[in-house]
Structures are given as C-alpha cells and as structure tokens.
Length: 113
Length: 113
Image (cartoon, rainbow over all chains, first blue to last red; front, side, top):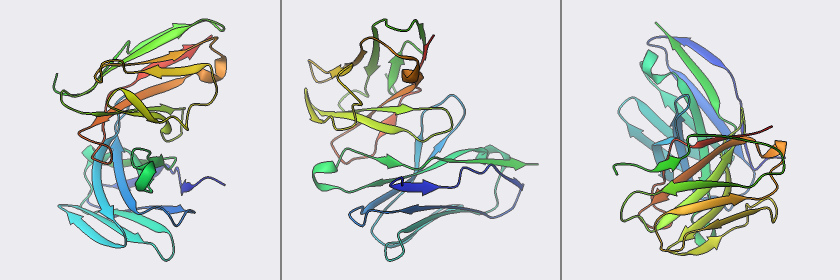
C-alpha cells in the first residue's frame, strides 16, 4: 500500500464548476500537508500549505485536512481553463524527515470552456 | 537565476552508460532535493542536501545512484550502468532551509534505450 493514495482521474469539468480533489494517507506521523500544481512538462509549484487539521483558504482555493480520518482535500471554486493541470498532494512528517515530501500519484484535471 | 535550472532538459542514453544530471538551485537556498517522476506518477523522493552534506539519502534506489553538492550550491545526480527502468523525469528542488517551501525546476527527462 502506498503511503499516499490519490485518484488519478482524469477529471473533466466545465468552466465555473467547483472541483474537489482528495487524498488519503496511512502514516499518522504526517503533520504537514501540501497541494502542488504541475503543468505539462513543468515542475510542480506549491499551491497550498497547511499544518495539522483544519481549513485554509486562498482565493479560489481551499485546502482541508482531517487528521482523524487521514484525509486531505483541495477545493477549487469557479474553475477556469487555466486550472487545467495535474494536482499533486504531498505530505511531510517533519522532524528528521523535514526535507522529504511524499507525493500522491496526481489527479489530471481538465476545465473546458 | 530567477528559478531552479536543470541541465540537460533531455538526455537519451543507452543501457549500461553513465549519466550526470545537473541542478542549479535558487541563489541563497541552502537545501536542495532530488526527486524522480515516472510517467503517470507523483514525484518520488531520492535525496536531499543541507549545505554540502546529504541529510537524507533514503530514497536512492541502489548504489548505482549517487549525488554530490561539493560547494553547497550546484548539485549533480550521477547514475552508473543505466537501466531502462531508470527512464523518468528527474526533478530538482531547492528551499531556503530544510522544511521551507520547495521550488522545483523543470526537470531532466532521461530516456534509457
């Protein structure tokens, strides 16, 4: 079993839709949670960063972490064609593993006009 | 430079050959990371440096893989006796310090024939 599970999709939505992306993880030691966006032939770029459980909002993006169920979510409101990319969740345990990110498989999202 | 740069952008080699992949981090970033991303998968951690030393090399798959960062800036990932299974995009990232936001380069696409 992978440490982080993510449905690869692909997910196709119309412009303006609300998108929900999710990951589950198995190790309760993870305490830092991130969402990265990766365009084709580019490196991942950080979208959202949260520590422990709770919600964090940034513009059209909301990240949620539920440590009790080991579940991470990213919501995109009013989705735009420019949001079309692969979305990767990533987790980190901190401590001596501070530098090591563990990624999910990535979900391919297409927003069509 | 403004971001993390990686050279070459593409590398095609034959099975059994030796390859070197280079990463130039963002100026002033003390931490540097290497990940490998296979087709349709999320990045997989290989190694990270804090300064000149490897702080965590637990992701290197075997002794054919080696990385150096002799002056605490540029890093080189070295792969000996390449195998077809080594074909992937090799991503480099850097951060101000360990645990800070990781900024990724565009990657080197390695193809082993």
